[in-house]
Length: 196
Length: 227
Image 1 (tube, each protein chain N blue to C red):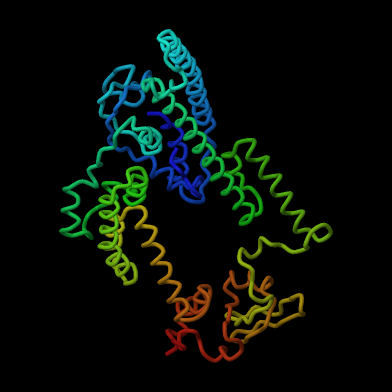
Image 2: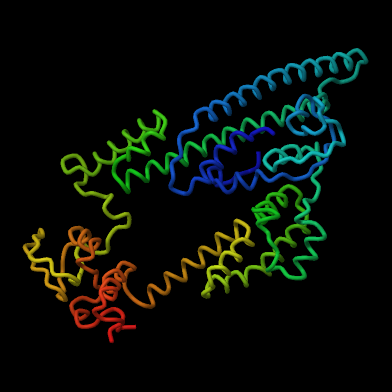
């Protein structure tokens, strides 16, 4: 079991752990071939078999060196080059909806600096743009386009930035959000527009 | 794949939206529990095999006169890896079922705070246990808020505690004379009053009153002019 810390009941964390990672079996496993590797059609998993395992399952096996984890292609060399070329346009949601959570989980198993560094660089490159876009007004089409590129963790940040922005403008222009209700109604009546 | 059914349960709840309560999927829950029982049976079988293998190995070593205490389950990776997979799957299924139950419980609890009772269409989506839980929770909360036994205040009125019991409101429409607990007030368009928030709230919802942050002075300027 992945050490879930305080996230035992977190829906996002269980869904992130569902991400399948390519693995190589170092030893065999009896009787579970049909469930783990249906394409082989065998009752047992043989040593050297390539199987995609979800993160929740592979942690315990990797700890005992029963499997080796291979690099998922969304952290691979090609992706690294793409991120370097232009981090903001890459569609992370399509490649891995939990890009950073999965990186963190894999890092906690493998403890290699390479993956952590890559995830961090990706985030740094994308975060600035995300924040600027969230804090300025965008056309609805641009908003949908932007949001379709973000992975789940980024979408949460994006939404938080939007909310803080609207909270700020509420404070700046005074009153509870309810206060808008009255005057708006009067304008519709045609009585007075914007106090002129 | 192991645990697929349980994660589908959670996904079903997520895709329904943050406040929605889709029908309780007892068929799927039953299937998940069945899967757990299958895992348990497989583990029993595997542990029997593992123990047999160990005894066999120990007997071999003893016959050769070597120490037997170094034999462990990790000497039989085919069995022990399968054993770990089954065990992890059980824990995973347990966690997912608990999340499913807790997510639903949180949503039902929210209904009690927002709408006070179970709407008819929601009730048909709940399991008997969930309905029973709602009834118990509702009774506990009502008892706590009752005047004779509890604190004598309706906490569900404001999800966030109000800063003050009274507030300034400005009248947007003539509404004649309205009785408040502080006395009768004639609501004339444009005038400002200091009224109990709990009683003014429903008039604000109707659009007769508007909350006024700055008090009586605001009667001369609309919020738009202040910008």
